Image (cartoon, rainbow, N blue to C red; front, side, top):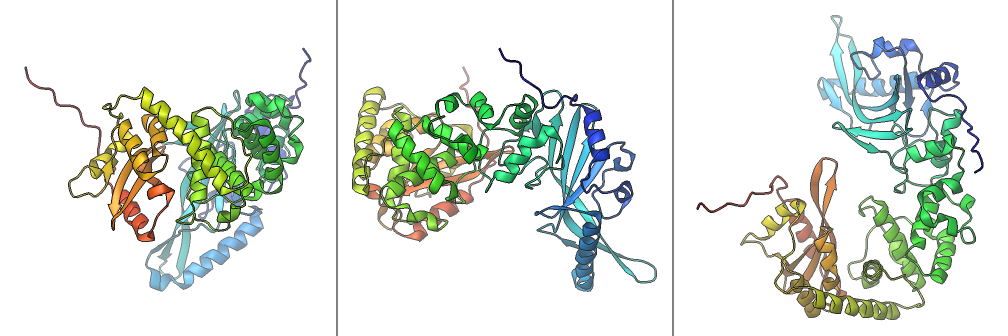
Length: 492
């Protein structure tokens, strides 16, 4: 086996980073600025041996002189409104931010600080002084030994994935480690990205690849089984890391000829499409939306992406979405050999019929879905007597609903069983709707519910915008504090 040449011959440790910052030409704020009133403070910041502070405004890092001028300008503007504002003013959009890098013995700690308050005070002579109060927004830790970059929140650690704001959550196209060989691939990624696209690759993957002298192609081949089979289809150097990742994952879902057409389309159009802003920020959602856009473009209906919303009666979007989902469910390769919405509908209905027949054979008519904890507040709210919504609690209910409405809700049985969504119905102004609702769960737990679909008969969409608003208002007002209740046991 050929021996790998390590580009980073130095030991990756505290000394490496201390020496780098000591000799760096980056605009690091000098030690005297660590004692200023207008920088973020921790109780022990002045006692740190190795703490380095950077200022940035969203576009670039600021030199000491640039920071001083910006501070004077911002504070001057606030002084003018002091008599009318009281003793302090809350800041919704911080005019600039700070990145504090602490070089510890076993790790680096990168903390982002934003301005959240401007406070005022008067001295004995009546002179007004103003100063900033800061809030720590994000904290990342880079461990030397494993080269993992972890996001820290409420004592929980999660790997920092590409597309989620960069190391230190600065969202800059360069790092404070500019010029350090270990970060060459990180800088390439930040510079190449057009927009923040989700992916399951992490910054740790990039750092370890650089340590082991892996290029972009080798990095992807190491993490994706299908990457080595795509040499004749994808030029790895003409796409960003996240774009190639999307293409490689899509290769597992398309049949061969369709995939070749998808790569060509993605290179010319797909990589520039802006996904709807309300789509949950996950790689699976992003990949699905790109595939849907490809299907719609194949039938000449890609115009829906000109706005940031889906037309209420745009059935082609939902047909494409459901067709891709059902192909995944049946482990079938997506094959686009049609060029009209009518043909898409025929393929959709044929696949749905096969799924429905399979479900009818396998399901027991009276069995109920398991209720996952994150859906209990929703179902308890729906089951109240005064509520017009109805929860479909059995697999057979979905099949009956699909037959009655002429759409494919019967194929959602697997998704409901896995806790990906629940299916509800509602009658508004004599119009019957089928609703797909999913729970939105973040690090802190359940934060709300997302209305994925609202369909009238034959995938007719929403007939009146007010109907959708009523459902969304109901979902937004659900009490999320309802906990799982223990069953009462009968006394013997």
